[in-house]
Length: 181
Image (cartoon, rainbow, N blue to C red):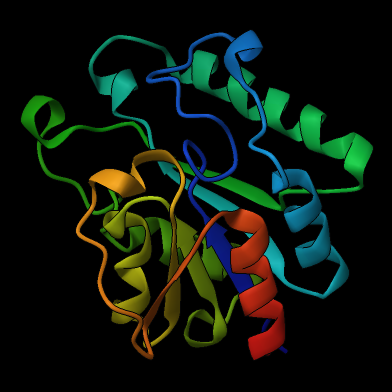
């Protein structure tokens, strides 16, 4: 039996977007994020982080720096009973390392997550603060929610459709997902 995932962007969706965090001390949860992830856990969704980390290609942080910030996120969520099941990241930037299939809105990381966690991509959700975070939902016939935190105020926000919705933050996005089950 396949499972349903919620693919979450990290910076600006779950944590404050501070640019290119290379120190775990820079990781701070956005209000309501831990409770929202805990609700996904409790309702049977598989929360997975998929994030572009071009700071690695830019030399602003190493993959180990990123992994340390990833572990810090998990530590911050734990006291709330919230758990990210898997973390996937693209370390590339097309101008520096060439094109790749893993940089959002590319679909490689989602296909890898689907294989690793037995995810039904068509029944899953995409949530992020940029259109590139939610656009992959279209490739799989799924739905996405653009949260109006982080960089969303700079994005061209589409009108609500059967594919894309908007929410004020991750907590509201999760409520939409849970109600739509």
